[in-house]
Image 1: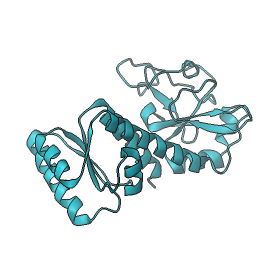
Image 2: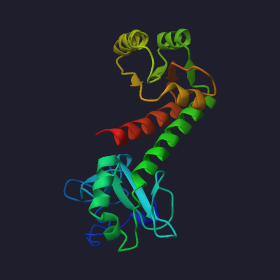
Image 3: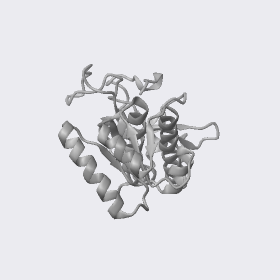
Length: 231
């Protein structure tokens, strides 16, 4: 994820600063820069330092409300929260945004719902990009053929898919993955109606994403969405 200018405060910054102790080259356990590690940020709720891919950035809109910046691209001062609904709720309860933004941030009660909607939309958009890139196959027979080719990175079932049909494809994916010495990711949390819209076809029950950067992008966004939904 690209660095932004407001997130480069040195470790000596105000300890209440949302970016204090975080740099674009990551942190060692001692809080010192380490160019060999991924960028990290300080969660304003837990005060834990985590990799940016496990975090969500928030900024203050012109009307004073706190808004999510899920792509970490919006200008201005940013506050980071671990990408879990419960952690955001805790940040709001503790009025952590007001402290991080020095009294200027107002977090509406609907903020967690908005974040969930944006993360879901982002994941589905990424699935659509993978489809446009020709990296998605649908239908039971085509999914089996793709699995047997050894090119599948992600196996996906609609959330309402019949358990026996999904289990057969899962078993095949495990056998092929074990033979190749790699895992095939599995996703079953999206309903068929959403898969239909994202892929531009009707009655999608099973799908496979081939190994490709667009598929990796979709998987990363789904992991963040599922982490957000986790208790």
